[in-house]
Amino acid sequence: MSIFRKKSITNILNENKKKTLTPTLKTIDLILFGLGAIIGSGVMVLTGIASASAGPAIIFSFLIAGIACTIVALCYAEMASALPSSGSTYTYMYVSIGEIGAYGIGWVLMGGYIIIAAAVAAGWSKYFNSLLAGLNINLPEEFLNIPKEGGYGNIPAILLVLLLTFIISRGTSESKIINNFLVFIKIGVVVLFIIVGAFYVQPHNLTDNFAPTGVNGVMLGATTVFFAYLGFDAISTSSEETINPEKTMPRAIIITLLICTIIYMMVCLVLTGAVHYSELGSGNALVYVLNKVGQTKVAGIISLGATIGLMAGVLSFIFASARIGFTMARDGLLPKALTSVNKKHVPSTITWLVGISAAIFTGFLPLDQLSEIANVSSMIGFMLVSYSTIVFRKTHPDTKRGFVMPAVPVLPGIAILIFGFLLLFTVSSLTWLIFFVWLFIGLAVYFIYSNSHSKLK
Image 1 (spheres, rainbow, N blue to C red):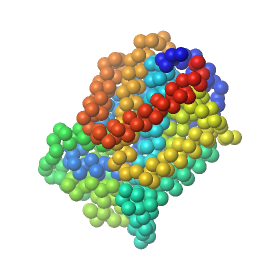
Image 2 (cartoon, helix red, strand yellow):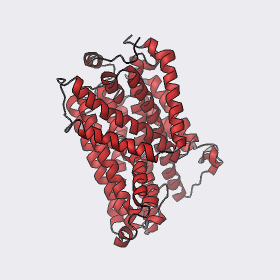
Image 3 (cartoon, rainbow, N blue to C red):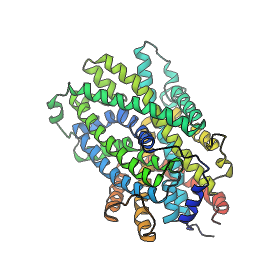
Image 4 (cartoon, rainbow, N blue to C red):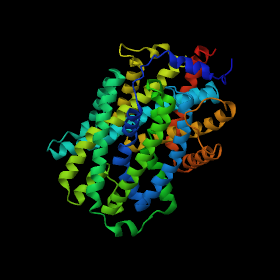
Protein backbone atom coordinates (compact mmCIF):
# COMPACT_ATOMS: atom_id res chain seq x y z
CA MET A 1 0.00 0.00 0.00
CA SER A 2 1.41 3.39 -1.00
CA ILE A 3 -0.38 6.68 -0.64
CA PHE A 4 2.18 8.19 -3.05
CA ARG A 5 1.50 5.87 -6.01
CA LYS A 6 1.33 7.77 -9.29
CA LYS A 7 -0.68 7.54 -12.50
CA SER A 8 1.17 7.20 -15.77
CA ILE A 9 0.67 9.56 -18.69
CA THR A 10 -0.19 6.57 -20.87
CA ASN A 11 -2.99 5.63 -18.49
CA ILE A 12 -4.47 9.13 -18.62
CA LEU A 13 -4.32 9.37 -22.40
CA ASN A 14 -5.88 5.91 -22.79
CA GLU A 15 -8.76 6.93 -20.51
CA ASN A 16 -9.35 10.01 -22.63
CA LYS A 17 -9.50 7.90 -25.80
CA LYS A 18 -12.48 6.00 -24.40
CA LYS A 19 -14.55 9.17 -24.93
CA THR A 20 -16.81 8.70 -21.91
CA LEU A 21 -17.53 12.41 -22.35
CA THR A 22 -18.28 13.75 -25.83
CA PRO A 23 -15.82 16.38 -27.26
CA THR A 24 -17.80 19.37 -28.59
CA LEU A 25 -15.92 22.45 -27.33
CA LYS A 26 -13.75 24.71 -29.54
CA THR A 27 -11.38 27.57 -28.65
CA ILE A 28 -14.11 30.22 -28.71
CA ASP A 29 -16.34 28.04 -26.52
CA LEU A 30 -13.56 27.66 -23.95
CA ILE A 31 -12.83 31.41 -23.96
CA LEU A 32 -16.51 32.15 -23.40
CA PHE A 33 -16.62 29.41 -20.75
CA GLY A 34 -13.66 31.08 -18.99
CA LEU A 35 -15.13 34.57 -19.31
CA GLY A 36 -18.39 33.20 -17.95
CA ALA A 37 -16.58 31.84 -14.91
CA ILE A 38 -14.24 34.79 -14.32
CA ILE A 39 -16.25 37.93 -15.07
CA GLY A 40 -18.97 37.72 -12.45
CA SER A 41 -19.64 38.66 -8.86
CA GLY A 42 -15.92 39.33 -8.41
CA VAL A 43 -16.00 42.46 -10.57
CA MET A 44 -19.69 43.28 -10.17
CA VAL A 45 -19.95 42.76 -6.41
CA LEU A 46 -16.60 42.51 -4.62
CA THR A 47 -14.87 45.34 -6.52
CA GLY A 48 -16.91 47.94 -4.68
CA ILE A 49 -16.28 46.28 -1.32
CA ALA A 50 -12.51 46.19 -1.89
CA SER A 51 -12.41 49.76 -3.25
CA ALA A 52 -14.08 51.05 -0.09
CA SER A 53 -10.96 50.13 1.91
CA ALA A 54 -8.12 50.26 -0.63
CA GLY A 55 -9.31 53.41 -2.41
CA PRO A 56 -8.15 54.15 -5.99
CA ALA A 57 -5.08 52.02 -5.19
CA ILE A 58 -7.39 49.05 -5.80
CA ILE A 59 -5.95 49.12 -9.32
CA PHE A 60 -2.67 47.85 -7.86
CA SER A 61 -4.57 45.15 -6.00
CA PHE A 62 -5.87 43.95 -9.35
CA LEU A 63 -2.40 44.24 -10.84
CA ILE A 64 -0.80 42.09 -8.11
CA ALA A 65 -3.52 39.47 -8.30
CA GLY A 66 -3.40 39.61 -12.11
CA ILE A 67 0.38 39.06 -12.31
CA ALA A 68 0.21 36.08 -9.97
CA CYS A 69 -2.74 34.59 -11.86
CA THR A 70 -1.02 35.14 -15.22
CA ILE A 71 1.98 33.10 -14.09
CA VAL A 72 -0.31 30.33 -12.86
CA ALA A 73 -2.31 30.51 -16.10
CA LEU A 74 0.89 29.76 -18.03
CA CYS A 75 1.46 26.75 -15.76
CA TYR A 76 -2.08 25.56 -16.43
CA ALA A 77 -1.53 26.07 -20.15
CA GLU A 78 1.49 23.75 -20.18
CA MET A 79 -0.03 21.09 -17.94
CA ALA A 80 -3.37 21.11 -19.77
CA SER A 81 -1.61 20.71 -23.13
CA ALA A 82 0.43 17.75 -21.84
CA LEU A 83 -2.30 16.08 -19.74
CA PRO A 84 -5.71 16.81 -21.30
CA SER A 85 -7.92 15.46 -18.51
CA SER A 86 -11.13 16.70 -16.87
CA GLY A 87 -9.38 16.30 -13.49
CA SER A 88 -7.32 19.49 -13.96
CA THR A 89 -4.99 20.09 -10.96
CA TYR A 90 -6.06 16.77 -9.45
CA THR A 91 -4.68 14.88 -12.47
CA TYR A 92 -1.49 16.96 -12.61
CA MET A 93 -0.80 16.12 -8.95
CA TYR A 94 -1.57 12.44 -9.53
CA VAL A 95 1.19 12.24 -12.14
CA SER A 96 3.79 14.46 -10.48
CA ILE A 97 3.29 14.08 -6.70
CA GLY A 98 1.21 10.99 -6.05
CA GLU A 99 -2.24 9.79 -5.01
CA ILE A 100 -2.60 11.36 -1.56
CA GLY A 101 -1.63 14.80 -2.85
CA ALA A 102 -3.94 14.42 -5.85
CA TYR A 103 -6.83 13.31 -3.68
CA GLY A 104 -6.26 16.17 -1.23
CA ILE A 105 -6.26 18.90 -3.86
CA GLY A 106 -9.10 17.23 -5.77
CA TRP A 107 -11.21 17.21 -2.61
CA VAL A 108 -10.29 20.83 -1.82
CA LEU A 109 -10.95 22.10 -5.35
CA MET A 110 -14.23 20.22 -5.70
CA GLY A 111 -15.43 21.87 -2.50
CA GLY A 112 -13.88 25.19 -3.51
CA TYR A 113 -15.70 25.28 -6.85
CA ILE A 114 -18.97 24.50 -5.05
CA ILE A 115 -18.32 27.43 -2.72
CA ILE A 116 -17.48 29.74 -5.64
CA ALA A 117 -20.71 28.77 -7.41
CA ALA A 118 -22.57 29.53 -4.17
CA ALA A 119 -20.81 32.89 -3.78
CA VAL A 120 -21.60 33.94 -7.36
CA ALA A 121 -25.23 32.92 -6.84
CA ALA A 122 -25.35 35.03 -3.66
CA GLY A 123 -23.94 37.99 -5.61
CA TRP A 124 -26.48 37.38 -8.36
CA SER A 125 -29.34 37.62 -5.88
CA LYS A 126 -28.30 41.17 -4.96
CA TYR A 127 -28.64 42.30 -8.58
CA PHE A 128 -31.86 40.31 -8.97
CA ASN A 129 -33.34 42.04 -5.94
CA SER A 130 -32.24 45.47 -7.30
CA LEU A 131 -33.91 44.65 -10.59
CA LEU A 132 -37.18 43.71 -8.91
CA ALA A 133 -37.04 46.82 -6.71
CA GLY A 134 -36.73 48.93 -9.87
CA LEU A 135 -39.95 47.32 -11.07
CA ASN A 136 -41.62 48.09 -7.70
CA ILE A 137 -41.59 44.42 -6.77
CA ASN A 138 -40.33 43.89 -3.25
CA LEU A 139 -39.74 40.36 -2.05
CA PRO A 140 -40.14 39.74 1.70
CA GLU A 141 -36.80 40.18 3.47
CA GLU A 142 -37.23 36.77 5.08
CA PHE A 143 -36.82 35.14 1.65
CA LEU A 144 -33.68 37.15 0.80
CA ASN A 145 -31.68 36.99 4.03
CA ILE A 146 -29.76 34.05 5.45
CA PRO A 147 -30.77 32.78 8.93
CA LYS A 148 -27.86 34.69 10.50
CA GLU A 149 -29.52 37.89 9.25
CA GLY A 150 -32.98 36.89 10.47
CA GLY A 151 -34.33 35.31 7.28
CA TYR A 152 -35.27 31.86 6.07
CA GLY A 153 -32.48 31.73 3.51
CA ASN A 154 -31.53 33.24 0.16
CA ILE A 155 -34.38 31.59 -1.73
CA PRO A 156 -33.78 33.22 -5.19
CA ALA A 157 -30.13 32.08 -5.13
CA ILE A 158 -31.15 28.54 -4.16
CA LEU A 159 -33.66 28.33 -7.02
CA LEU A 160 -31.10 29.69 -9.51
CA VAL A 161 -28.50 27.05 -8.57
CA LEU A 162 -31.03 24.23 -8.92
CA LEU A 163 -32.23 25.56 -12.30
CA LEU A 164 -28.68 25.76 -13.70
CA THR A 165 -27.87 22.31 -12.34
CA PHE A 166 -30.82 20.99 -14.32
CA ILE A 167 -29.54 22.73 -17.47
CA ILE A 168 -26.05 21.26 -17.05
CA SER A 169 -27.52 17.79 -16.57
CA ARG A 170 -29.23 18.10 -19.96
CA GLY A 171 -25.94 17.99 -21.89
CA THR A 172 -22.70 19.83 -22.67
CA SER A 173 -23.94 21.17 -26.02
CA GLU A 174 -27.05 22.65 -24.43
CA SER A 175 -25.03 24.12 -21.57
CA LYS A 176 -22.54 25.59 -24.06
CA ILE A 177 -25.22 27.44 -26.03
CA ILE A 178 -26.79 28.92 -22.90
CA ASN A 179 -23.41 29.82 -21.39
CA ASN A 180 -22.26 31.62 -24.56
CA PHE A 181 -25.49 33.64 -24.65
CA LEU A 182 -25.13 34.61 -20.97
CA VAL A 183 -21.48 35.61 -21.42
CA PHE A 184 -22.23 37.95 -24.34
CA ILE A 185 -24.81 39.70 -22.18
CA LYS A 186 -22.45 39.92 -19.21
CA ILE A 187 -19.55 41.38 -21.19
CA GLY A 188 -21.94 43.83 -22.84
CA VAL A 189 -23.07 45.03 -19.41
CA VAL A 190 -19.49 45.62 -18.19
CA VAL A 191 -18.51 47.44 -21.40
CA LEU A 192 -21.64 49.61 -21.12
CA PHE A 193 -20.66 50.57 -17.57
CA ILE A 194 -17.14 51.50 -18.68
CA ILE A 195 -18.33 53.64 -21.61
CA VAL A 196 -21.06 55.51 -19.70
CA GLY A 197 -19.14 55.81 -16.42
CA ALA A 198 -16.04 57.19 -18.17
CA PHE A 199 -17.86 60.46 -18.84
CA TYR A 200 -18.27 61.04 -15.10
CA VAL A 201 -14.72 60.33 -13.96
CA GLN A 202 -13.36 63.14 -11.77
CA PRO A 203 -9.52 63.19 -11.64
CA HIS A 204 -9.49 64.37 -8.01
CA ASN A 205 -11.33 61.21 -6.96
CA LEU A 206 -8.36 59.22 -8.26
CA THR A 207 -5.58 61.45 -6.93
CA ASP A 208 -6.89 62.56 -3.50
CA ASN A 209 -5.87 60.02 -0.85
CA PHE A 210 -4.89 57.47 -3.49
CA ALA A 211 -4.01 54.72 -0.98
CA PRO A 212 -5.89 55.54 2.27
CA THR A 213 -4.90 52.30 4.02
CA GLY A 214 -1.43 51.99 2.55
CA VAL A 215 0.28 48.78 1.51
CA ASN A 216 -1.82 46.69 3.90
CA GLY A 217 -5.00 47.88 2.23
CA VAL A 218 -3.60 47.12 -1.24
CA MET A 219 -2.58 43.59 -0.20
CA LEU A 220 -5.90 42.94 1.53
CA GLY A 221 -7.60 44.25 -1.59
CA ALA A 222 -5.50 41.86 -3.70
CA THR A 223 -6.82 38.95 -1.65
CA THR A 224 -10.39 40.16 -2.04
CA VAL A 225 -10.25 40.89 -5.77
CA PHE A 226 -8.30 37.68 -6.36
CA PHE A 227 -11.77 36.10 -6.28
CA ALA A 228 -12.52 38.11 -9.44
CA TYR A 229 -9.88 36.12 -11.34
CA LEU A 230 -11.09 32.69 -10.33
CA GLY A 231 -12.33 30.72 -13.29
CA PHE A 232 -9.48 30.43 -15.79
CA ASP A 233 -8.45 27.22 -14.02
CA ALA A 234 -11.96 25.86 -14.54
CA ILE A 235 -11.28 25.83 -18.29
CA SER A 236 -8.87 22.92 -17.81
CA THR A 237 -11.62 20.76 -16.28
CA SER A 238 -13.30 20.54 -19.69
CA SER A 239 -10.28 18.99 -21.46
CA GLU A 240 -12.02 15.70 -22.26
CA GLU A 241 -14.93 17.56 -23.85
CA THR A 242 -12.63 19.74 -25.97
CA ILE A 243 -11.68 19.22 -29.60
CA ASN A 244 -7.87 19.10 -29.99
CA PRO A 245 -7.21 20.05 -26.32
CA GLU A 246 -3.40 20.05 -26.65
CA LYS A 247 -3.55 23.27 -28.69
CA THR A 248 -6.98 24.61 -27.77
CA MET A 249 -6.50 24.61 -23.98
CA PRO A 250 -3.36 26.82 -23.73
CA ARG A 251 -4.70 29.28 -26.28
CA ALA A 252 -8.04 29.65 -24.47
CA ILE A 253 -6.53 30.02 -20.98
CA ILE A 254 -4.07 32.76 -21.97
CA ILE A 255 -6.53 34.76 -24.11
CA THR A 256 -9.21 34.59 -21.43
CA LEU A 257 -6.99 35.93 -18.66
CA LEU A 258 -5.65 38.74 -20.86
CA ILE A 259 -9.17 39.92 -21.75
CA CYS A 260 -10.28 39.82 -18.11
CA THR A 261 -7.27 41.77 -16.80
CA ILE A 262 -7.86 44.61 -19.29
CA ILE A 263 -11.56 44.76 -18.42
CA TYR A 264 -10.90 44.79 -14.67
CA MET A 265 -8.38 47.62 -14.81
CA MET A 266 -10.81 49.76 -16.77
CA VAL A 267 -13.69 49.01 -14.38
CA CYS A 268 -11.50 50.02 -11.41
CA LEU A 269 -10.57 53.36 -12.96
CA VAL A 270 -14.18 54.23 -13.74
CA LEU A 271 -15.52 52.97 -10.41
CA THR A 272 -13.15 54.95 -8.17
CA GLY A 273 -13.02 57.90 -10.58
CA ALA A 274 -16.75 58.52 -10.88
CA VAL A 275 -17.48 58.22 -7.12
CA HIS A 276 -15.23 58.82 -4.13
CA TYR A 277 -13.98 55.52 -2.72
CA SER A 278 -15.49 56.27 0.71
CA GLU A 279 -18.97 56.01 -0.79
CA LEU A 280 -18.38 52.53 -2.18
CA GLY A 281 -18.83 49.23 -0.36
CA SER A 282 -22.16 48.32 -1.92
CA GLY A 283 -22.72 44.75 -3.07
CA ASN A 284 -23.93 46.04 -6.45
CA ALA A 285 -21.27 48.72 -6.94
CA LEU A 286 -21.76 49.23 -10.68
CA VAL A 287 -25.44 50.01 -10.27
CA TYR A 288 -24.74 52.24 -7.26
CA VAL A 289 -22.23 54.36 -9.17
CA LEU A 290 -24.52 54.86 -12.15
CA ASN A 291 -27.44 55.83 -9.91
CA LYS A 292 -25.13 58.23 -8.07
CA VAL A 293 -24.20 60.07 -11.28
CA GLY A 294 -27.82 60.21 -12.42
CA GLN A 295 -27.75 57.46 -15.05
CA THR A 296 -30.69 55.59 -13.57
CA LYS A 297 -31.88 54.12 -16.86
CA VAL A 298 -28.44 52.71 -17.63
CA ALA A 299 -28.30 51.42 -14.05
CA GLY A 300 -31.52 49.54 -14.73
CA ILE A 301 -30.02 48.01 -17.86
CA ILE A 302 -26.93 47.01 -15.84
CA SER A 303 -29.12 45.36 -13.21
CA LEU A 304 -30.99 43.40 -15.87
CA GLY A 305 -27.82 42.41 -17.71
CA ALA A 306 -25.98 41.45 -14.53
CA THR A 307 -28.95 39.43 -13.35
CA ILE A 308 -28.84 37.44 -16.58
CA GLY A 309 -25.07 37.38 -17.08
CA LEU A 310 -24.01 36.33 -13.58
CA MET A 311 -25.79 33.02 -14.15
CA ALA A 312 -22.88 31.98 -16.38
CA GLY A 313 -20.47 31.98 -13.44
CA VAL A 314 -22.69 29.67 -11.41
CA LEU A 315 -23.05 27.35 -14.39
CA SER A 316 -19.28 27.23 -15.04
CA PHE A 317 -18.27 26.33 -11.48
CA ILE A 318 -20.94 23.68 -10.99
CA PHE A 319 -19.68 22.18 -14.25
CA ALA A 320 -16.04 22.32 -13.09
CA SER A 321 -16.70 20.80 -9.66
CA ALA A 322 -18.73 17.97 -11.17
CA ARG A 323 -15.96 17.14 -13.68
CA ILE A 324 -13.32 16.89 -10.94
CA GLY A 325 -15.60 14.70 -8.83
CA PHE A 326 -16.34 12.52 -11.87
CA THR A 327 -12.62 12.02 -12.58
CA MET A 328 -11.88 11.14 -8.94
CA ALA A 329 -14.72 8.62 -8.90
CA ARG A 330 -13.47 7.11 -12.18
CA ASP A 331 -10.11 6.55 -10.46
CA GLY A 332 -11.85 4.76 -7.59
CA LEU A 333 -11.22 7.53 -5.05
CA LEU A 334 -14.92 8.34 -4.73
CA PRO A 335 -17.90 5.92 -4.98
CA LYS A 336 -18.38 4.35 -8.41
CA ALA A 337 -22.01 5.54 -8.51
CA LEU A 338 -20.69 9.07 -9.17
CA THR A 339 -19.32 7.95 -12.56
CA SER A 340 -22.76 7.19 -13.98
CA VAL A 341 -23.65 9.22 -17.08
CA ASN A 342 -27.06 9.81 -18.60
CA LYS A 343 -28.10 9.37 -22.24
CA LYS A 344 -26.58 12.80 -23.00
CA HIS A 345 -23.18 11.50 -21.74
CA VAL A 346 -23.30 13.87 -18.76
CA PRO A 347 -22.21 12.68 -15.27
CA SER A 348 -25.65 13.50 -13.87
CA THR A 349 -25.31 11.98 -10.38
CA ILE A 350 -22.22 13.99 -9.38
CA THR A 351 -23.67 17.07 -11.13
CA TRP A 352 -26.79 16.99 -8.96
CA LEU A 353 -24.76 16.29 -5.82
CA VAL A 354 -22.62 19.36 -6.55
CA GLY A 355 -25.66 21.50 -7.43
CA ILE A 356 -27.60 20.64 -4.29
CA SER A 357 -24.53 21.32 -2.13
CA ALA A 358 -24.03 24.73 -3.79
CA ALA A 359 -27.72 25.52 -3.26
CA ILE A 360 -27.41 24.81 0.47
CA PHE A 361 -24.29 26.98 0.84
CA THR A 362 -25.66 29.93 -1.14
CA GLY A 363 -28.88 29.84 0.80
CA PHE A 364 -27.44 29.88 4.29
CA LEU A 365 -23.89 31.33 4.36
CA PRO A 366 -22.81 35.02 4.03
CA LEU A 367 -21.14 36.21 0.81
CA ASP A 368 -17.93 37.48 2.44
CA GLN A 369 -17.34 34.15 4.20
CA LEU A 370 -18.04 32.21 1.00
CA SER A 371 -15.59 34.27 -1.07
CA GLU A 372 -12.77 33.98 1.48
CA ILE A 373 -13.14 30.19 1.74
CA ALA A 374 -13.14 29.98 -2.07
CA ASN A 375 -9.98 32.10 -2.21
CA VAL A 376 -8.10 29.78 0.14
CA SER A 377 -8.92 26.62 -1.81
CA SER A 378 -8.02 28.26 -5.12
CA MET A 379 -4.75 29.77 -3.86
CA ILE A 380 -3.63 26.38 -2.57
CA GLY A 381 -4.61 24.85 -5.90
CA PHE A 382 -2.61 27.49 -7.77
CA MET A 383 0.45 26.92 -5.60
CA LEU A 384 0.27 23.18 -6.22
CA VAL A 385 -0.18 23.44 -9.99
CA SER A 386 2.86 25.75 -10.04
CA TYR A 387 4.82 23.18 -8.06
CA SER A 388 3.53 20.35 -10.29
CA THR A 389 4.80 22.21 -13.36
CA ILE A 390 8.31 22.29 -11.89
CA VAL A 391 8.24 18.60 -10.92
CA PHE A 392 6.62 17.48 -14.20
CA ARG A 393 9.24 19.31 -16.25
CA LYS A 394 11.99 17.39 -14.41
CA THR A 395 10.32 13.95 -14.35
CA HIS A 396 8.78 14.02 -17.86
CA PRO A 397 11.01 16.29 -19.98
CA ASP A 398 10.21 14.47 -23.23
CA THR A 399 6.42 14.54 -22.95
CA LYS A 400 4.76 16.32 -25.87
CA ARG A 401 3.46 19.76 -24.88
CA GLY A 402 1.24 22.08 -26.91
CA PHE A 403 2.58 25.00 -24.87
CA VAL A 404 5.84 25.39 -22.92
CA MET A 405 5.89 27.51 -19.77
CA PRO A 406 8.84 29.98 -19.88
CA ALA A 407 11.43 30.45 -17.11
CA VAL A 408 10.78 27.27 -15.14
CA PRO A 409 11.33 27.04 -12.15
CA VAL A 410 11.68 30.80 -11.57
CA LEU A 411 8.19 31.98 -12.58
CA PRO A 412 6.29 29.11 -10.92
CA GLY A 413 8.42 29.74 -7.81
CA ILE A 414 7.40 33.41 -7.79
CA ALA A 415 3.72 32.41 -8.00
CA ILE A 416 4.16 30.04 -5.05
CA LEU A 417 5.73 32.82 -2.96
CA ILE A 418 3.00 35.36 -3.82
CA PHE A 419 0.13 33.05 -2.96
CA GLY A 420 1.94 31.77 0.11
CA PHE A 421 2.28 35.37 1.35
CA LEU A 422 -1.40 36.10 0.71
CA LEU A 423 -2.45 32.92 2.54
CA LEU A 424 -0.27 33.62 5.58
CA PHE A 425 -1.13 37.27 6.14
CA THR A 426 -4.62 37.93 4.80
CA VAL A 427 -6.83 34.94 5.67
CA SER A 428 -8.88 34.94 8.89
CA SER A 429 -8.52 32.23 11.52
CA LEU A 430 -12.18 31.21 11.11
CA THR A 431 -11.69 30.59 7.41
CA TRP A 432 -8.60 28.47 8.13
CA LEU A 433 -10.61 26.48 10.66
CA ILE A 434 -13.36 25.78 8.13
CA PHE A 435 -10.78 24.82 5.52
CA PHE A 436 -8.95 22.35 7.77
CA VAL A 437 -12.22 20.77 8.93
CA TRP A 438 -13.16 20.18 5.27
CA LEU A 439 -9.70 18.79 4.51
CA PHE A 440 -9.84 16.50 7.58
CA ILE A 441 -13.20 15.11 6.42
CA GLY A 442 -11.70 14.47 3.00
CA LEU A 443 -8.66 12.67 4.39
CA ALA A 444 -10.93 10.54 6.58
CA VAL A 445 -12.85 9.51 3.45
CA TYR A 446 -9.56 8.70 1.73
CA PHE A 447 -8.21 6.38 4.41
CA ILE A 448 -11.59 4.74 5.10
CA TYR A 449 -12.68 4.25 1.48
CA SER A 450 -10.52 5.69 -1.30
CA ASN A 451 -7.17 4.08 -0.49
CA SER A 452 -8.60 0.57 -0.68
CA HIS A 453 -10.75 1.25 -3.77
CA SER A 454 -8.14 3.09 -5.87
CA LYS A 455 -7.75 1.61 -9.34
CA LEU A 456 -3.99 1.91 -8.99
CA LYS A 457 -4.11 -0.62 -6.18
